Image (cartoon, rainbow, N blue to C red; front, top):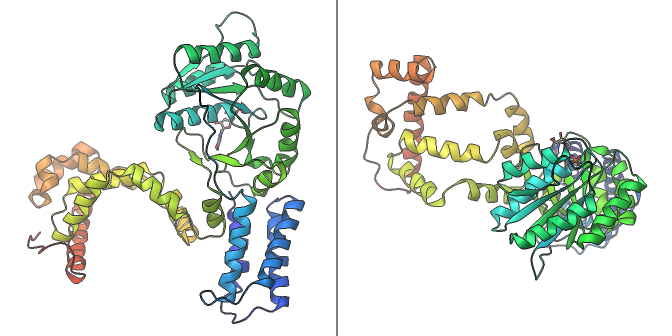
Length: 444
Ligand code: GDP
């Protein structure tokens, strides 16, 4: 998502580099190109207009800065304006003083509400909450079962109407769901509602009736970022029909232009609070306007990367491993552990995409076969603890045994062990050069 926009904006801004001074004509030309890039990405016209006039005005009036050259100044302004259309500060969920906090999900059918319900529940659990999912989508066949499945995946309880009682009344289910949350002391309730394929009065009425029955603290409008310009009109219809307090963008992993999603905040005045970027339960993020803006501008998203790293790594163990790097005491066991931690952060391609300038690297990695890493893990797992701690002892017969056990060729094991020794030696030398990490007396 946003790749095309990102490429276009990066190249427009790149053209400014090296210019000592920007004339008014330079600024106008840049603004024109940015305008085309935004329109091509499907950003709604009124949003483009205010964006461009903001950029132009600020770029022309910009004070001469000691710290930034003119090009950097324009990049800074474009970045700030982009953060602005994305909503400025991130907004946290409004939690009820007297729990449970009720969160109502509304949106078209297929927008990803049910999937999101599970993601949000899992995320809330991770934050120490005790959510209950309530199945009020009684329209779509299987929606209730689907919510039960995601609930199980998220490890949270689901309140659903008893089967066999006909279609049932979603308003009644919602009311009973909230009562059940109070009874069982869940501190948050997520109410999944029925959508329709298009904007529809009956759907709006039902969602409003549920809203009136449960008086939610947050109503989140869930919108598929891939529906293009329709995102804006759908958002307006939900704003007028049901009203909402926040937006969730889904399917940000898709390759559509995504600009419509960028318009929703400005058009509806409500903040984007979460982003869903895949079908798996963990493909979910709190939406940070500033991080998204810098990602679109190709500056990478180092902050998100750091946060993911913090979650995936055990800081103490990582530090121990880092210390061992310098002394040449790193073992294959440490290596396996660090590799697993990196892989818990997601596919490598996604990781490098978050680094500054990572988009090109991402293309190169497109051909990288992640099954190579599976093979490496299988090999190390096939070794005894002694072999992992001291790979020197892995002689020919041990190699044969490990190869048989992990289903690879002996040459794969030779490769891995040789590379490991080389890497260890290199790191040891580097540590010596930069004065880090002890004596490194051990030889391989
Ligand atoms: P609902 O009708 O609004 O409840 O939508 P669902 O939750 O059933 O989602 C519709 C389809 O979109 C399902 O196939 C989901 O797996 C898929 N989906 C939901 N969120 C995402 C996402 O962020 N990325 C992708 N690629 N697919 C998603």
